[in-house]
Length: 76
Ligand SMILES: [Zn+2]
Image (cartoon, rainbow, N blue to C red; front, top):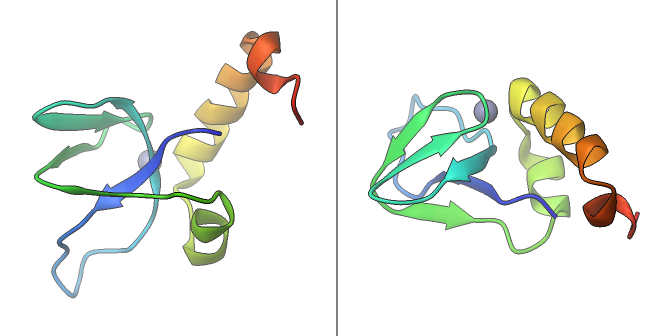
């Protein structure tokens, strides 16, 4: 599965949308280009992001990445 993440600490106005992490490090860059600093909440099951809302851009980019790597998509 893709690495769905979201900021662990969000202020009340921030959305709880899940993104796919492209690079994890001190700053996490997501597929849609968002930069997340600080601790991450990492989805352990794919149904959690599906239920709580996923970033449209990250969904699309993740699907394209999946198509380009047949080995990773073999399980679905
Ligand atoms: Zn995103």
